[in-house]
Length: 378
Image 1 (spheres, rainbow, N blue to C red):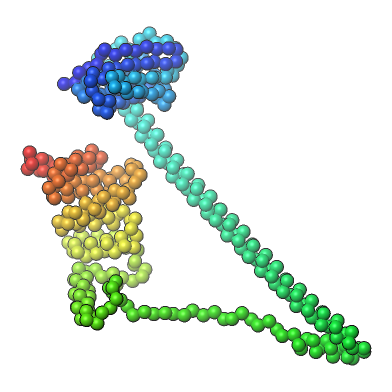
Image 2: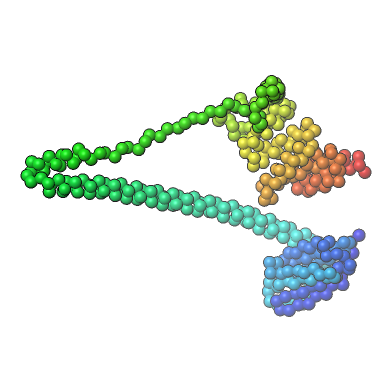
């Protein structure tokens, strides 16, 4: 039964209230504190302290400090006044109702604040993406303009140089010719002497094809028969599972299609085909979390518990940050990892995972498994 702390000390100024609660020998790492605008609660060991404040406080500007012997609250008043009492004098039933209402209000405020942070982060990300796209577009346009300017400048210099050379030769021959007839012949002669600039060479693409090699090591004639036998058996095994990545059309090589294909195999109890489809989808997109979650289920069914644990852990890494939108997926992965841990005799860790999963999202299947594990290992 908890011990209610009543030997606390409080003092106040016009703007602040200071509360000192003794820890009674309990280590400060075991202290759990809840604060709201009018309700403060602290639990440590078997000790319990709570107080309903007479007036509201500013939670954001208030703070607390845990020393070796005391919990010290420094509360900032909403209104700068002197309080007659620390808490109101009300009946016990009204006090219980008020505490419940204050806790619910604080939970609602916290949930609203978290949703606003998530929405704000998403909006900042969208704005950043738009700005980056605009910057990239401007940079591409600047580069394109520079290319055009350099091209025009180069062509202009080349034409000017050609005209200058032509004019110099014409002037030299003009000086050597005394009559107009010779001058005209000289002009035609110079024009014939000017060799046109050759056009750029034509480009082409060289296709280089190598002999296909299925193994990472160089081919050896002494092992050729064994390698071909292994490749034949491996191809038969893939065909027998109902899924062969070589049979998929290029337009079907996307994670969504492979996820649906694996789900179809799973419904038909073709577990090897399901694992092959999910694994090929993961090979194409290693950050598609739904593929890891689905494959962990098949590994559990087949008894591949270590692989199920690995898939669940990878999925949990991809499900960060932890937001309400991925709560169900996180609870499912933690629960499946707990089941797999129990199957490989890591009972304590498995029970802990199952309890965490049930706290996040209630699940009858995980609840039944947890009860069975506790009964069998009690």
